[in-house]
Amino acid sequence: MIQADPSGKLVLSTDLGLDRIFIWRFDPEKGTLTANNPASVSLPPGDGPRHFAFHPNARWMYSLQEESSTLVKFDYDAANGTLTPKQTVSSLPPGFQGTDYTSEVMVAADGRFVYAANRLHDGISLFSVGPSGELTYVAEEWTRGDYPRSFNIDPTGSFFYTCNQRGDAIATFRIDPRTGRLSFTGQYTGIGTDLR
Image (tube, rainbow, N blue to C red; front, side, top):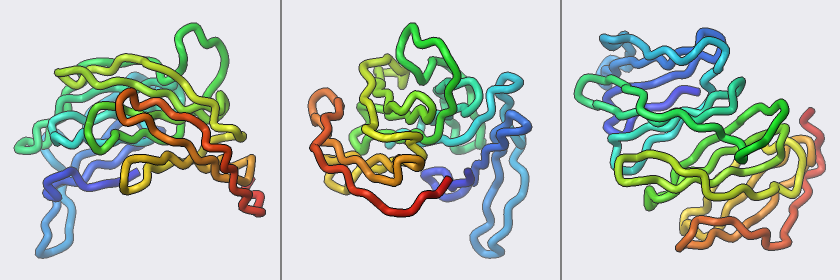
């Protein structure tokens, strides 16, 4: 993925094959990117960084690794464009054994929770965010479908939608504002197109 940081002055991009997150300086007048110094941050070989999300305070960033099914919490220095890894946790429930591929990570608008999708496990993991941005596993919710490829939270922060690629459907969940937990609403919207 590629996305601007909260300031709009830098752009970050993941490279799954190189196990790196690249950082670029953006020139809004020319519309060009130039490599930051440092130009990237490395993750462990084979981890495969896929998606990332910034915390609303713009000081923390969470990177989700597709191959290793991990979340890395980085401290982010917007002035220098640097990422400093501070914590690595599994995106899967404790004790899970098996293969999985992650797909998406998102931080709740209030900054109290982080959600991560596990495709082969067909689940959304919920983490609470501590005072220093550290993650603590809270719970997992089954997506009611196969291969959650993408998800989103509605603008009110009340509902959570997961797109189950192989299930050809969008499942709707209500978000508990106190705990961040998801509860299935019973709404399962078929799309009618197999995207496999």
